[in-house]
Image (cartoon, rainbow, N blue to C red):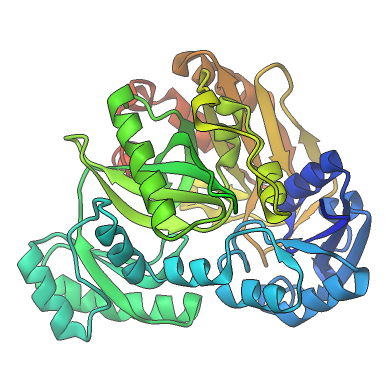
Length: 448
């Protein structure tokens, strides 16, 4: 096992990784930007190194500074968390070259699956169903129009190097497609440095279902069941739950088998997520693979009892998975609400500021993952998520009630949060009945 590990991230995921390291007896190094000098993850680590000014590009995306911190402190491994450099193949490649373990898959797999068009082709070759679409990146606007006309509208244009809902547009006719391609390219270029796009058929009224997988370097691969991530605002997830409501044992088995086939097709190692869309006829299609830990991993941990972050670290150290497929049990129901420093009633406008009051919910079946507390400054430089509240109970109905009570007892003052908005979701009759899809917010949650 590693003696020392550097966490190349901030906020709640950095704190989550630090806790896993503490349980494994690993010394830790935090990195931080100048504005994060007093952050919780800095105080929790054994050592901390400043890696630059507040903007992400100068700190948490600065590979040279992060690697320098690792070398200077003698870190043997780097955990990238999610976002930032977690799916940047170049970062994993530099770690490999410096003989520092990267807690994630090899750089070659990140690069291969980071290209969404190439990932589609790989899945097709391995027999995993994919949404009908272009065989690779479209050559130009005319090529996109021809493919869309053949598929039939509506269609989606998606960034080849996409993630986080960026570089995605839905077109309902040819004229709209041509108008949207330019903005999709510009957003993709700014976000990923790659403006290539591909086209696929838009599956309406679909659910966003993902399957958590774990794989080690000894040939063992398992799945930890599915999560429903359909509650989204502009492709950004707000609430996730596991298991997915209404998914039969037969469908769950087929989803798991497809996820395992996808992982084995690329020789996957470490934690990853296979994302699918599920239509009203219970037909599912691969959309992408996330080669990192997911924000919503706690619902799976609550459901299965498997510590995914700890497994990540153990696998990176060359150890075997501690779980076997036949011994993984799915117990009860878990829900996660992402609490943002934002005004949900006004288009999720960010609400930076200083937290003057912070009271977390307590009680059995409640978990709070956070990187803030009373007095923490929420900066406009970073993602506005300040906490994840997870509720578990034996049934979905009971888990919803427990989550509602937890949010009611949570107090955050000094800025606006999405807690009231999440309460509205939980009280919505359609949500209570499990009638959710990716259009839930648009249809049932009016905002000003």
